[in-house]
Image (cartoon, rainbow, N blue to C red; front, side, top):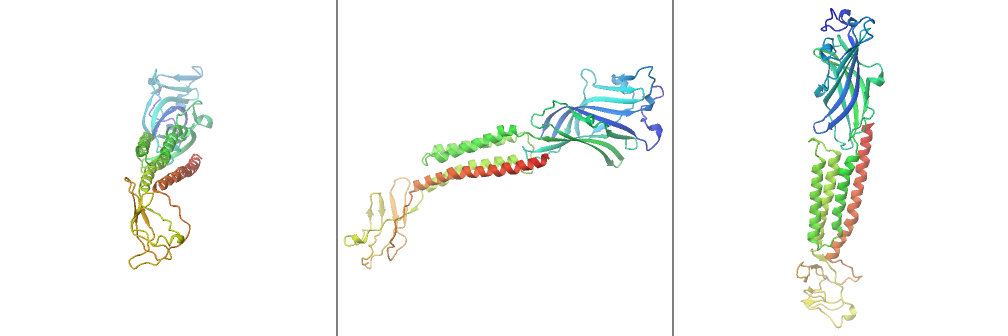
Amino acid sequence: MKGYNKEEWPSYQEGPGRPTRVYVEIYIVSISSINAESMDFVVDFLLTQHWKDPRLRFSENVSKVLELHQLRQIKKLWLPDPYIINAKSAYFHEITLPNRFARVTTEGNITYNARLTAKLSCQMQLRLYPMDTQECEIYLESYGYSTEILYLHWHWDKDTAFSMEPNLELPNFMRPISDSIECVDTYSMGLFSCLKVKLKLQRRISYHLTQTYLPTVLIVSVSWVTFWLSVEAVPARVTLGITTLLTMTTLIGGAKQGLPAVSYIKALDVWMGTCTFFVFSTLLEYVVVSKASRRKVVMLVPMPNNNNANTNHAMPRSSTFSSGAKFENHYSPPGTAKSPNQTQFRPHKLSIPPQNGSFEYDVESPVDTYLPGPTKVILTPAQQAKRIDVIARVLFPSLFGAFNFVYWTYYLMQSWDEAG
């Protein structure tokens, strides 16, 4: 290496316009710690660079290949200066010796290999989370040499330019799909050659199906048990509603762990919000049922037949029936003359106080004639409350099933489009 100057790049003597061309290989050993909260991932890879330096030619009588394993020997060579643009941190492996070597052939062809681990930033879009597909990059660029001095290329063999460990497995993602790109970045200092590897990472949904979606479906289903409980079972229905609501709140907190606070709505937020609404609606349904069982209801009282007109011309102002209903005012059957002080009334409203069970009949609208027709069957407040429960038993599962159909159809189609 007599007369060799490592400050000069290999094509320095050839003059301007003849940059040194460096061919790059990347071999991914492992990908780990894909963190959505900090939006980064850790990659362990081998970086191999090939270039030709005519100044290092030597006779075959010495050796066919010169191996350099000592770091102090490697540092005597001119080396390219690529750096990782999107790296948050990176380091060379040093165990048990520095994981770097250089190989020089008799023609001056140099191969330089190093093992690195880098934490790389990845701008993630989480609108479809947990059915999302992320595109992360390994972004290399020459730091100090412009394109007039150094030009980066992918290795001429496309199969080795970028490759991954055959048994590479990611816990929450499918095996990455890669795409290699050559590029040139423009800065105020000039043009700089760069290389990109785009990794398409499709998230596996199986984990979230078992840990998030299935538990929430069970919680929503359990909340519907209240529709089969009696209206009088106040402690049971209230306790069940509150317990399922608190459980949903706990599941929401667990599902959002490890996620960043973003300003848009994620697919998981839509699911959790809707399930919480269904659970809360069961409490509201019980409020409606409880109110219905205690409210005033319209009740039609059958009028006496004309055959009895000769016996009963007027009903006393206060009469009590076997049901305990107390009626005020009086009426005259059809066909009987009304005295000046009498007005015929049609029974109109029946209120049922919830405690003593007494019935009070309120007369609201006078009528001149009796309108014949079939007697209408009026449900008691307890029966009306029960009817609401019966409707809810069908309505709630139907609406939840419709929501599931729309949710999964929409987001799965979006996920497939994004994954390509």
